Each structure stands twice: as C-alpha cells, then as structure tokens.
Amino acid sequence: NAGVTQTPKFRILKIGQSMTLQCTQDMNHNYMYWYRQDPGMGLKLIYYSVGAGITDKGEVPNGYNVSRSTTEDFPLRLELAAPSQTSVYFCASSYVSYEQYFGPGTRLTVT
Amino acid sequence: GQQLNQSPQSMFIQEGEDVSMNCTSSSIFNTWLWYKQDPGEGPVLLIALYKAGELTSNGRLTAQFGITRKDSFLNISASIPSDVGIYFCAGPSTETSGSRLTFGEGTQLTVNP
Image 1 (cartoon, rainbow over the protein chains, first blue to last red):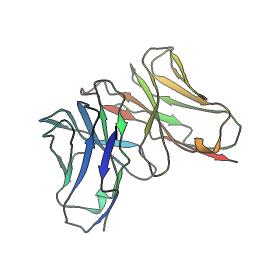
Image 2: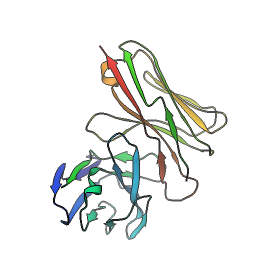
Image 3: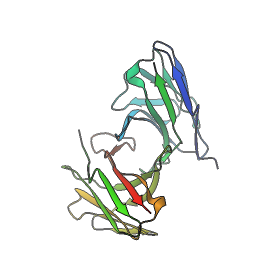
Image 4: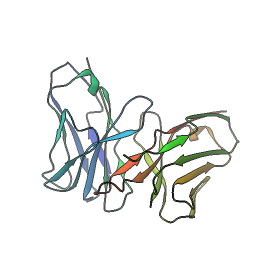
C-alpha cells in the first residue's frame, strides 16, 4: 500500500491564480481531511469528508473548496490564490477511529 | 473551541538523555494521540490512548492518558539523533462529529549528538 499520496510536492502560484491539490489514499478509508500548517504552528482543519459525496467545513475553510466523488480521492481547490494561503497542506485519512494517517504534504507559496 | 496546550514549546537535549513533554486541555478528552513530524514530512502516529490512566509504550516511547482526562504525557528514554522533530498531541473534538481532531501546537525537540 502507498498509503496517502499528495501531488504536487511544491508549487508557486501568483496572486489570483487557481490550482487543485490532489490527494489519494489506497487504504479504503471512509474519512479524509485537509489541513494546513503555517510555520511553527500546529495543524488547522480546512475541510473533511466522512464518505464519497459528503463534505463539510473545518476551522479555516474560506478560500478553499473540496469534492469527494470517490472513496480514494479528495482534491482541494484554491480558486483565487492569496498570500495568506502560503502554507504546507496535508491530506489525511482514517477508517472510523481517530487514528489519522497523513500524506507527505504540498508546500505552496503564493506571491 | 477546544484547545490543547503543549509544553515545553521546544527542548534542546544531549543524546542519551530522557525527555518528558505534556499536553493539557480545559476540556475532557476521551482519546489522546501522539504524532511525530520529521522535518519536511507529514505527521506519523506514534501512540493512541483510549482509557483514562492507560500507559502505553512503543519502543523507547511511553505515553500516559491522564487520570483527569484533561492531560496526557509523552516520555522518550535514551534519546538518539533521529528523535529530532516536532511532537504533536491530538484529541477528538467533542463539539463536532466525523472523527475530527484538535491538535496542539507541538513540542520541537533537538538532540545534540
């Protein structure tokens, strides 16, 4: 099993551009999550999903959108990139319990 | 909302020393999790605790679920250079559903060889 994979690893965006961060898990987990981590800080939940077709907002959803059309994939969309969205983005998944498994992260810079 | 406070924020120790760190909350948690994040990587689950008073080990790591259910402790014995990283505590938010976790802000550990 590859676990949780994320692409791209790094990306630089100009203000106002849009992009999609990809996340895929091969563990047949129901729950998937998107977090952002700012330098020296903990993880803040952006969006999460309890199963295909179901998504909900986390603590910091503004400026982001998600979709969950399959169990495996949970892409995160940034529509109009802003410097405040410069961060490291982590995708995670879990089966039913709270034991979440994280991907390697996408490092995004908006200039 | 619920918050988790970790201390210390950072530690600088010599190889071979033991390490203790803790996580506290003003709310009761029914589960405590400890994660480690290596530089440039995603967090990795180290230990999960599900019962008040529970003491669980994973190699040189030992974690305890506080009896009040408002705190948890992580100890690392005989530290080695690869223990370097950020250690996060986490617990499920009782204010929401869907296996959501609240994370502390981490303890940064530096081990000098």
